[in-house]
Length: 421
Image 1 (tube, rainbow, N blue to C red):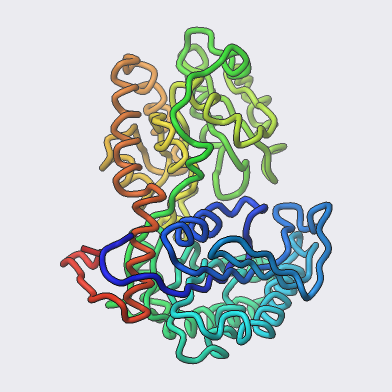
Image 2: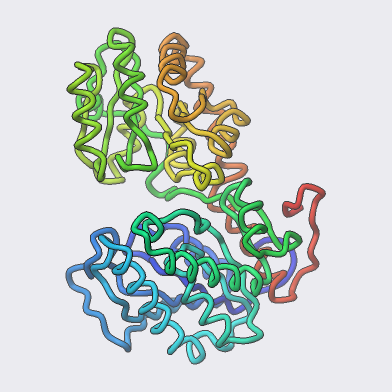
């Protein structure tokens, strides 16, 4: 248990929760209960990522499960709205209404409330905090509302409503944890008290992502032929900008291979670019189960982390970075802000500015020239950094400390950098 304070009653408000791929609120709830706290989770019925309630589940009002020191209450929400701004907002608002209706009875006597703060949770958090009154809240901010599909569609009213609700939640919170260093400035600008803001980096699903030895099937799938293999695993979407990686790889067709594992909205365009450039060293592998990924990571030489050069992404650390570091995989990062800074500070790989294919080609070339023992040392340093700063025990220690502070059970100690001491 983190220093200071004993067991407390903890509420958790999260839009997503297992069996959805929501390992941060899920593992936090399990770990806090294992540490002796009484934990109550208020969430919705599982529908991510397809936007449809999972087979075998039926939305209803009275759905509550219990295990030792952990209770989960699920409330209905509108599903099927992932494809449009209006549909997403209907999901967000319906969850807010349902959560508010049951919050007083289910969470009214908790000592502190933890909110896994996504834009999807904002309206619910605002309503629940107003209803519960004096219950102090710890927000764990994952994404700061900036530019969104609402603006792109010319519907700025949703953006204004979301921004106003988020500002109210920030001002009401007893503590605000941010998932990336630069996010601190964004939440302060949006209304958070800077004295209440702390850094708590996300962890990965450590039951899955850990160092592994690749089997023959993984090696064959990655297709190693003696050349350096850089792998990108995950979404092929607008935020990643994988066209930059394809152009960089095409310039080094006899030096390295680029393997893209996954799918997404931009997959057709990225495949088309690889075909147009005649980039035979760029290969696509369909989406794989997360449990397969550590072996695939180990079969490659580097993991590629890509983020476009957008203001809202500079204060973001994508989850694939924690997964790679936990697996002791060296990283090539084409990103700015916190992602590149973490890779460089950990000496866990190479980095270059985002959306610059020539600079990324140079990093690919350098990566291919680094001997395998030096690559393994990068991976070792990355895993050490992960265990020290980003792991489940480290993250839960920090969240537990913030919950104790919010509940008045511990004396706050802050170092000069604004982090927990």
